[in-house]
Image 1 (tube, rainbow, N blue to C red):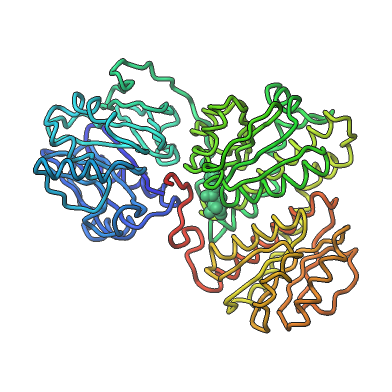
Image 2: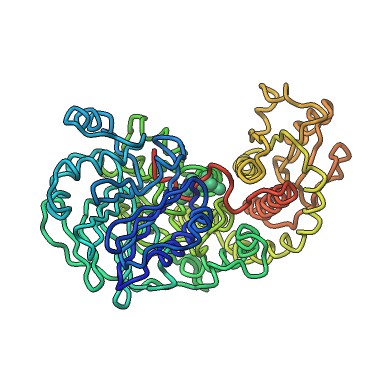
Length: 596
Ligand code: M6R
């Protein structure tokens, strides 16, 4: 979603901020802008990608050392130049991530006072409030910020103060980076990591400014805050595609390593080794409620099946945006598990808030460091998938699944169940996934067969309902093929009407206790001439009704989603590639969804 970068140094900040902004391209956006103060403030904006901006001005920007830049993912107002950030007037330029919820009333009030608006954005009210205030930004911000409702990360330039870039944040992420005679700000630290690893994660409701040499952070009441500087470990290889054509393909191939790394601090040679605070929470747990969005939600669906079956603990899962508006039923022993690779998903952050207010503990599963979710959670489990640049989640999902599987095992063990077989299978999982990766050529050929497909239905039962959900999400996200997922038993209650010889039906059915039942669904599809792609294992009987059968390596039934997911990711990838699509940045999608 929208990206912000700000840089202040002696001179030539424009090129560097745009380069840093390119590192945020994976977040998804539809217009771009730059503000630079040299002798005066200049603003450059374009619809489309950063390259369009660079090309149209032939990379020639003022030489000043104070610059902010922004990629905008349209919310209020179409992706047009007039709505691109920075919004500027009267020597002030503002870039903004988030949504100002009381924009309409503020706009009305400002218009009554004579303000003239030039965009359809909610951001412009911030600019107009600053102009109406008329004071220095440093003085105006503490007066204005309390008037804003909603979420914001802001970077602000004021021509009168060319040696400062102002910032503010509430509910939207913003990090600061300390360099050598230069300082940075960005909505995601990957923007400036090649330049500096000294990082300050800003707390909620903070504002301040950076200069070449200094960083000042303030609370809403104006009192100063001592910056907490962290040195962020970073592997530059994660930001390079290497031998792969796309980040997504690279990230798919990184999954055995992502799982090994994720397990490394959670398993010891003796067995489970989750941190004490997590185990203490699990010890008290009698009931679980999960909240998450998208792929992370699909991970919670798989978790539900594990935790209920292995540990006998009841578990509800809810899409975070829905959970927010449901009544809470807190009870002793309730644990909320929030899953989010970014830890910045607005809906997920909002979903955990009422639970925290009701003193219900929240255990978060996150992949990034310093994110908003981990900061408000009672305990965290960090996955170690590494930075994921492809907008469609792949390695972070399998890292989430392996972490959640451990949570289910821990609960089972606390309940007295022997989990040694499951642990052994989990340790062997990376090599099972290597086998699936070795099948890429076969999967690519299957994908080529279905490239022209218009509609697809993914079916799975029980633990493979979530596999079907994720397989269908991957396909629709990157190939734009209309894909739906259903619990296989539900097909006959409606979706069966869609089956025809044009419909691709992907059936996930490793040989296990559910195979017979799902075979029934498969025959119903075959009877209506659907094109069946069956994902199964070698123990299954031959299924002549399937157009294609993909035989996956065997693991224990509880873990059979993992090889199936890798195969489905590769399948979606190759279909999208055959269709010539922008796989790493699919249209309309954002990597981190920081708005409601
Ligand atoms: O960062 P999160 O895990 O909270 O993100 C949740 C979803 O926005 C995300 O999983 C989304 O569905 C991805 N595009 C999946 O590929």
